[in-house]
Structure formats: C-alpha cells, structure tokens
Length: 504
Image (cartoon, helix red, strand yellow):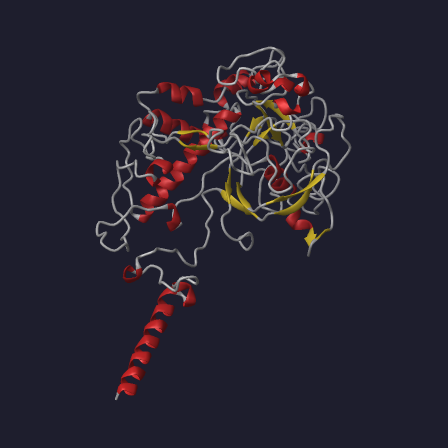
C-alpha cells in the first residue's frame, strides 16, 4: 500500500513537471543553478522574459557586425595621414535607413515648443542655423527661409545642426519612442497636456520618478505584493537609447561589405559604398548615372539641363539614388554626417580593436546621501554626474571620468610631463592642445585656441558640395561640436542587444 502511494506521488510530480515545462518552454522554465521555477509566485516570483526576440526602433536598419579594415582605401590626397589602416571589430547595431529629415527635426521642435512652456530657450537653442546658407559671393538667401520650413523640402536632410544639437535630438527621440511603446502596451496614457518637467523621460519612469500618466501596472509575482509593478527594463518592452553612431560603426555600415563576402573572404574591398572604382552606375538599366549627390567638378553640381545626372544642386531627397547592401541610403554624398567620436589625427595609433571610440566621459546617477536618486531637473531629465576618482580608485579598467584626451592630449602624453612638479601635473590637464586660451570654467585648460581639442568632432561621408574623394567612407574631417554648416547632417544609431546575427 505504501509503495502504491509513492508511485502515485511520483506520477503526480512527473505530470507537474511536464506541465511546468510546457508552460515555460522546456527546462528554461526553471533556474539551471537552483532548480527554482521562474515566473511562479509559489517559488518566490523571480520574473524572467523567455524567448525574447529583439526588435528595431522606428526608422532603423539592422547592421550585422564583424571585423573589417578601417581607414583609407585609396591615395591620401590630403596627406593628413589621419586614417591609416587598422583592423577592428564592430558589434552589431541598428542605424537609421536615411539621414534625419527636415520634417523629423521640425517634429522635434514642435514638441519642444509645446511642452517647455516656461523655458523658451530650449526651443530656440535647438533651432538649426539656417544662416549657414549665406555666401558672400552667392545668391543663397532663398534657402535661408525655404530649405528647412517649406514642405517641398520635407524629405530632405536637415542641415545647420551642430553635433550638440544632434545629440539632444537623439535623447528626445529615445523618450518619444519609448513613450509610444508603453502607450501601445497599455501602461501609460498619452498625455498631451504635459508641461515643463512633467514630461515622459525613460530614465525617470524606470526610477519611479514619473507618475503623470501611468495607467496600468504589470501583475507582480512577488509574494505579498498585490498592487502590481511598473514596467522595468528587464521586461524587454523599452528600447535602448538612440545615439549618434561611432566613427567605426559609421564607416563599417557605409562600406556595406556584407554584400561582398563569401564565407569569411571579402572578394572586393570597396572604395565607395558600392562596387567599382568610379562613381557611376554600372547596371544596364541605369548605366552612367551618378551613384550619389556630389560636385563632379568646378561649377558642376547637377549636370546639364535635359539630362541632369545627379539631379540635385543642394541636398536631395534622403531616399535618392540606390541603397548600399545594408539598405542604407546616401552613405556617400548628399550631406556629411556627424559621428560620436572626438577627432584626433593619430586615432589609428591609440584605439581599442573592439568597438574603437574616443570621447568617453564616464557618468553615474546623481543621488542623495541615502542613495536615492535626486529629483529630475527643470526639463524632466534625470541628473547624472561624472564619476569621482574615489569611486573608481580600485578599478582595473578605469580610474577617472574624463578620457576624451587619454594618451593624446592629457598631461601624461605631453612632452613636458617629466619636467613638471606634482602640483602642475594635477592642474594642467590638457597641455598638448592648449595654446593659452581659456574659455570654459569647468575645463580651464582644454585648448580652445587649437583647431584640435576636446570639443572637435568627426564628420564623414562627403556632401552635395564635395568632390568624389570625400565620398569614400575612410576619409574623415572635423569641426567644433557647437558649429554647423549647410553640408553636415546626421543619422541615429542604437545598440543591438542579444544575438549578433539573423536580423537582416
């Protein structure tokens, strides 16, 4: 009798295990290290999202990463020697299919004006500089009023935007996309009356500091917690932040070598984002047509009437011409594009061979003495601050916050480093590029008088007014991050989380 009872218990336990497996997708329904079930209040309620499929944000294209040779692929006509070849690896990521358009940026400005009622300077500071069209010896004034505002140019890339403004746009876009995702999932109301600091911010929402339009919470599986909980980042609903692509990412995506590989062999290394050594289409259908919008020669911006070859005299529609093998439009010509990196002529000497980037300033959440986050600022954004030397003192990977000038511009890389006493070494932080001009209180010796300093950013791609040389993804130029021109725009990128393959 006792044996029969044990047999029944075993059968019941087996059926329970089978039921658990079917519910959670096989053995993944329980921890492989403790045996406790996931997503079960009777076992503590530890919640795990299983079989998650990553998704792209609006406007983004998946870029499968890999190794490539970064740098020039043709003669260095400028003799700058600032793009010497080196092999690096880029992780998979997402990138905008097109450059950010005038209509996209006007949507951003409309939101700023509608929400930041008490802070009109936020709107004014975000305005593109339309005066970049003026020229002392050219009649370009009509573009000052027409190019950004007129609906005929809705689908043309925005210009006159500085690197700083482009970064602000990326952060705004991150919050608007995540706000819409939460609305579509039913967790918040779409609050059209939000004003000033009472607007949706992803970080503030995740930290529990945004309550204005929260509608529903997710059922909590934690024992004793009946009121539910708000969405967390672990739920996989919210997306990572939009940002500018790094220089390595941009160059890798522009080359589009995914279309020129066989197994692990690259059958042709491209000069431009397309195959061949010239800038004309080689297909029988479009033979001879220009592959990009650029200046063919002195005074020739679009060809001859009746047969306008590149068809655009200024930046054209962002989906003009043909996409590269990643499906990206205008990675050569139309407008140059800002990338994330700070410029250094010797970037090829000092770099990580995995995801190389210069421009790191490590920050952390600004908290109260008890560890709770400080309240949001007047614009509804969570406050961050640079990490202190004490916080990073025992770390093997970094020991300070500011790494923009690391190995090229900081005091340790200065020729006078050994001739200085200890006091000078701690106060003179960027001696290499300092030519005696100080304009910023927070970094008094960061070298504003030098053309190369810690606020100079890289741009790439060639534009409507550039010669063919600059259409090669390996070429690079630089400009102060607060400056703008009529031939520089931008596009956004985003991290690709999880698997690096299978999303093309």
